[in-house]
Amino acid sequence: MAEALTTESLKEIILSRLDATHVEVTDMSGGCGQAFTTVIVSPQFQGLNSLKRHRLVNGALKQEIAAIHAWTAKCKTPDEWQRDQGEANRPDLEGTVGGKVEGTTQ
Image 1 (tube, rainbow, N blue to C red):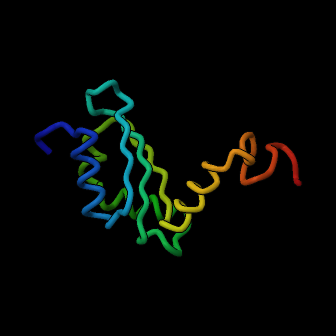
Image 2: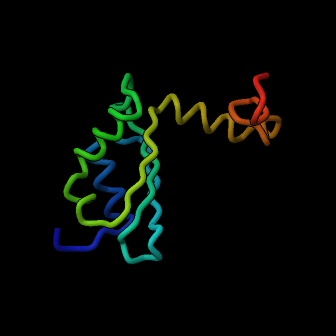
């Protein structure tokens, strides 16, 4: 890989290789392209557990990941993403985890 990765170039690669419907890429290295965190929403994750999702992403981005120092990915299906966005926009759930007060069972 000759060119350094940018947030935009990595986003385009993820969109095309994983048929992603939503991608967020953040360069955590201050712009030098050596540490990225991502949110990837793809129907390809349907029916896969977290480990299999990450293996799918790592396989699809093997060359790019090898060229950077640090990589983090949150992998969600479109349904999971939509559900999470709905919960994030509900003020009545503020301070909760999944609608429950953190540290409780109710």
